[in-house]
Amino acid sequence: ETGVTQTPRHLVMGMTNKKSLKCEQHLGHNAMYWYKQSAKKPLELMFVYSLEERVENNSVPSRFSPECPNSSHLFLHLHTLQPEDSALYLCASSQSTDSYGYTFGSGTRLTVV
Amino acid sequence: GDSVTQMEGPVTLSEEAFLTINCTYTATGYPSLFWYVQYPGEGLQLLLKATKADDKGSNKGFEATYRKETTSFHLEKGSVQVSDSAVYFCALSDPGTGGSYIPTFGRGTSLIVHP
Image (cartoon, rainbow over all chains, first blue to last red):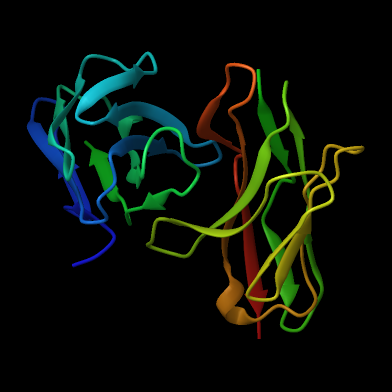
């Protein structure tokens, strides 16, 4: 399988639940990213990983916890979310953080009830 | 800091109409400029790019010219199709002078094309 794959595609969770989003890339890229896409707002960069190390955390609440166990996989662990966290969460990868070519996954549509 | 401003949507057109989606930017250096497209239910895909002033990026009948004097990168297509219905994002990367390759995105402009 090629490209960036995100699972699940859709997720509904209660505010007390714990869930995880998964992102997988088989492009040989060394940088991976989490973005939040909300209606009528710019794409929000949440986290950046380079060679499995977190290099950027854009003031994201601690109820979002990323994990990058290897350069092909990226997770976003979710706990005690709020309804305003409902959004499309996009994963992306690039050869490195010093390159232009981004490949995005199709996203996970998250609804917090 | 760097920013990208796109025209508000949705833009609604009939098939074969001419399309323009405006994009202007603010940057401290000499950024590279991009248009991404997001089809329903999918992630963003790079549509075209331009890396220096007066460059024209083109792909799938879309084109945009990097205008440094007006800090603009407007997206155009001569004849749109129903299959072009999507959300279009303008973005810039400004790695020079201590900046970052990580793109700054606009809010996106929704395009709806009717048969």
